[in-house]
Length: 254
Ligand SMILES: NC(=O)c1ccc[n+]([C@@H]2O[C@H](COP(=O)([O-])OP(=O)(O)OC[C@H]3O[C@@H](n4cnc5c(N)ncnc54)[C@H](O)[C@@H]3O)[C@@H](O)[C@H]2O)c1
Image (cartoon, rainbow, N blue to C red; front, side, top):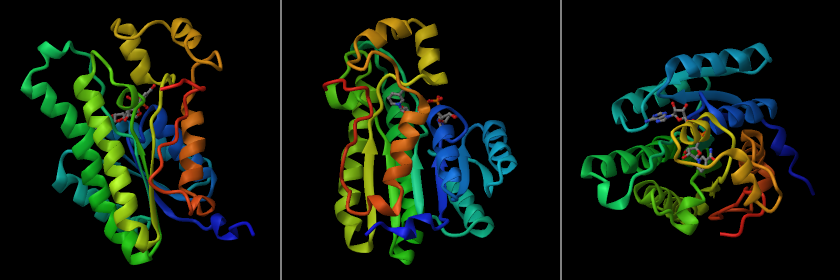
């Protein structure tokens, strides 16, 4: 019997919602009738995305906050709760990438990559979970990285943070299963976003054609590819899926 409850409008918070994968997730969740909070460090970008969602008939709000700033994040979640309602879906796409030879990673650089990618995810999950527990329903989808699955020579800090995100997600899945809350992670690879284009422009990633040649499906992914999977994992229909790592990577074997 399909879950008709899947059509219900929920409040979804999407971190990193102003760009790339997060922006696409906002669009997909809004298209499913959810009320979407676009949370991002880039307040203007979040405003732009929220405005576009509202122009398409969705209920949406921009929330400017740095995921490493707990007081700002607390204020943002409170604002979202009073404007849209309690959070029931959280997708954490805010992230910072960096490429450094291992011996050149300074402690400050290490801390920053862990702070934004791992502690930022922890902060957002901790802010969102009380509402989900109260609702006895919740969906957490973290965006990790394929670099955490295979290791990455010039991204040890980033890959370590994203590996932490994967095991944080699995831990949340086990801790909150009794509350009707699922937690799953999508580790993207080769998705055409501003982050990837910046890394290519800086010479840290090969050109798109070279990257595509290494992917079994023969092309790079789009933010919509990730967003479709995230929207499914956030749906009522995905209620028996938790603690999983869903590769959306064109068949790359990791
Ligand atoms: N593009 C890829 O191929 C790829 C591959 C693996 C993992 N990822 C992961 O996917 C996620 C989305 O990446 P993207 O490619 O869409 O990048 P993007 O740079 O286009 O978007 C990232 C967004 O996160 C926001 N952000 C960064 N730091 C923040 C902070 N401290 N607080 C709040 N917001 C912050 C940025 O302002 C931006 O809007 C990231 O976590 C990234 O690590 C992407």
